[in-house]
Image (cartoon, rainbow, N blue to C red; front, side, top):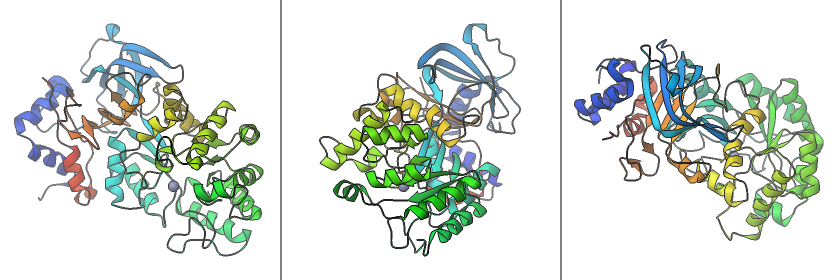
Length: 452
Ligand SMILES: [Zn+2]
């Protein structure tokens, strides 16, 4: 196809369905303003969009507001008003009046470049409802480049905070492609500063081995205390948070002593250790869906889930993370059910992926809540996620910074599945030179589902 890049994805969209069907879908979405050439809404689009929400979840208060209209302009929320007092003045309407609207989700632990195509992985993550993610380790700086392309609007994906390369010992748990650090604490400081110079937003450090070793040898960990201190000092000097792969109790004690900000997989902790974490303001980011095989599970897995409960009861901030890349990208929401099975309430797990994650990552002004002035990062589901968190695995609508990305797609169920009965339309917004590489995936997500 000899299309300008900005047109490519919409042409894929049109090719997949009859033109009439596609037009109907767009008409439903944008009312009388729809026409075949209408540009999708984008960050630079100054047209106001009015998102009509059947109910809006205020995650901080744990309460719903019924029938509200969220106005979005230039990618940000400009006002939120009761539907009955809304008077339309030429806005593009987005009808989610039968759905539950909530903030875009945050996954604090993924690896977009671990395997597969990172562009496709980013799109799968975004269309599953995750509008912000933290990439916690790469063998190079490919995800930092992807982050910059997404920010520049030349690639599609969630907002990314990227760690760059894992920082760990040579021969250790995170030594992939020989990126492990050789040398004393000075060499760890150099490794941190290389990441920061390359543009890393956070630093990932690997302190202990995996769960079976941490369970068998609870006091063992592989990084010297001086190295951990050096990583934390170098990162904090440059105002970067440090998140640790650290599952053993001994490793957590070392991390607490050194001032690590958060733990990336959950860890084996008792009440006393959880109290120390709380006192230091350290957050815990379990990855239970990827680390536990479900009930009844091995003794180590049960101990890990129990530790999450203990930490929560001690007041430790629980932050949502999945290690996606280990789990398939786009299936991140599996973790909600795993956290509920570990003893958190649905509201607590939704907070972990919204307000808590934003607070832990220092991005509360940009993500985690729906409020005037914030980027318009919205998702919609059908049903009540405060009763059943598994419906978060069936996100119907995603808006990230005012761009609508998908409606009615599920990463496992695909399009037009009977469990996706009535959703309106789809509009994949921006296009870029990257769609050649992610073309197959882009085709997959750009097929509309039409309601009757
Ligand atoms: Zn990981």
